[in-house]
Image 1 (cartoon, helix red, strand yellow):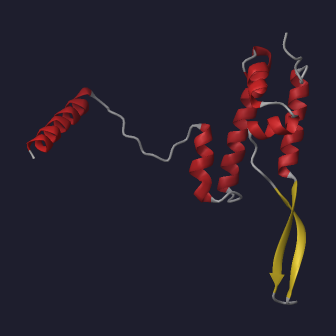
Image 2 (cartoon, one colour; image 1 turned 30 degrees about the vertical axis):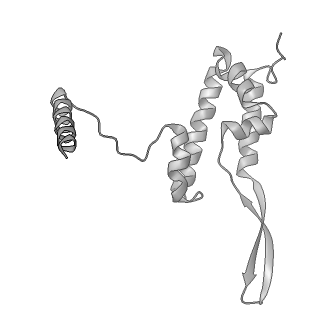
Image 3 (cartoon, helix red, strand yellow; image 1 turned 120 degrees about the vertical axis):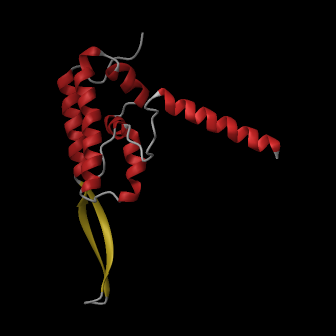
Length: 147
């Protein structure tokens, strides 16, 4: 017999998710900068946000990722809230890129987690494209074999 679930109800999981999002949106960070006006270093605590992730939620809730997916994601009772959590992670990441909270250089890395790709993959539209590629490949092989 496995260990009992941490979240006994959908409402409890939802409340913990909301607390996690609040924690992500209100991270306090100590920053340092040089003030040329006063010729001194200045430190200030600023509010920053971090991106929502299922992994971050698992750490926040003190549950392993594998247990989260086994006990909640794969269970019909919790399916809707888990789907919403995943969607909110994706929307949060997109918003933070569009608002430039996260550097655009990291967009490919972050958005690949949600099924986006930076490659413009060409799809074969019809059989003639595949035949043309096969002929070109065959000719290319013959040319390289003659050398």
